[in-house]
Structure formats: structure tokens, C-alpha cells
Image (tube, rainbow, N blue to C red; front, top):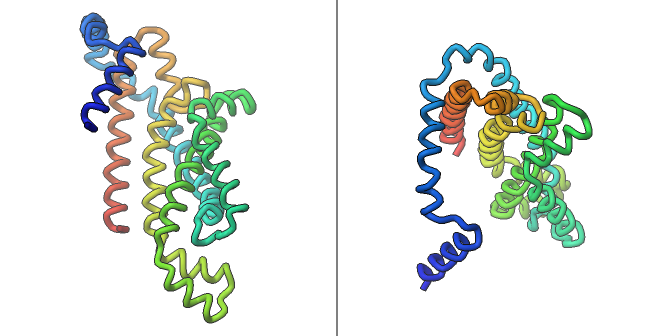
Length: 244
């Protein structure tokens, strides 16, 4: 029954969006032509894009760090076992859900309109995106912690701050670092395209090369971005293995 429902949903979605295998087959020659123009990549273009890639990584690093810092108090307010009052918890969760519904590209476009072109807009967009993602993951993890240490500390008269520092942080710190690394990986990918709306980074070169139909240069940018992402993924996975 489940398989039938899934098939019907796929069929209905394809019909409404006019996505058919015929259209895919019809466009296949154009896809092959594009691939021919992209290869071989223009290796000499590498020197031009290194500074922009470094800027992209810096944007992701700063945005992730600021977002993680802002996410900590909000996650504490969203966790039901740490903030029993629904009058506080539900409005904060609503704001958090609202933040997470705004795409990062739209955030970047908004900040570009406010602060102008450049990496500042990209950093702010990634900060807001990281804040929403990390806060969501952390508060869900907080709701699964062992309440025993908290109850013991409450029984001996520990202050709320002491309960958080000594009862909550030790249980959640490994997960928190893992979530921050995960957000950083995502932000490197996201920062690579924020330049399409003028928010700095390597995305500006995507816009320029695609606009001038220099697909061999675009291919060089894609390969460079892929290499950076793979390295970051590998290092993050190694760090998470040691933490968890």
C-alpha cells in the first residue's frame, strides 16, 4: 500500500510539473554539448580563483562561529526539559522555525540590499542560517540528555547556571561540536554560490564565467570547490569520530 501511494505521489508530481522522460531525452544532446565545452577544464584559471576560495572558507568559518554562539541560549530556551514554561518555549521555537524557512540565498540577497555588495552580506546570511540549523539540532539533543545529574544538583541547591555548566554541558558538548562541524561543511557549499547575488566569495566567479559562456573556467571552479569540500568533509569526519 505504501509503495502504491509513493508511486501515485511521484506520478502526480511529475504530471503537475510537466517533468517527463521525453523532455529529459530531448534535452540530453544539449547536456552533452555543455559537457564537451566544460572539458578539459582551464587549469591556468586556478590562480585567479584561489583568493576567492579562501574568502569563501573565511565567510563560512565566521558565519558558522557566530551562528553557533547565538544558537546556544536559544537552544536552551527551546528544550522542554530545561525550559518547562510553554509561554517561553513555544514563541522561541516559532521564531526559530521562521528563521529556518528562509533560504540562504534569499538571506544573502536581503543583506546585500541592506549592507551592499561584499562578503559581509554573505557572512550575515551564513550566520542566520547556521543559527537556525545548530539551534534546532542542539535543542533536540538537549531533550534526550540524562536528567539524573540535573536532579541531583537541584537536590543539593545548585543554581540554574551551575546545573547547565556541570550537568548539561558535559553531556552535550561532543554533539554540539559535531553539529558545528556539520554546519561548517554545509556553509562552505552554500558560501560558494552566495556570490551569485553579490555576497562575495567564489560564487562571483561562477556568475562571471557562466555569463561569458566560459564553461572550461566554470569547470575549473567546480573541481576546485569539490576538492575543498572533500578535504573539509574528511577532516570533519575524523574529528567527529574522535568526539562521538
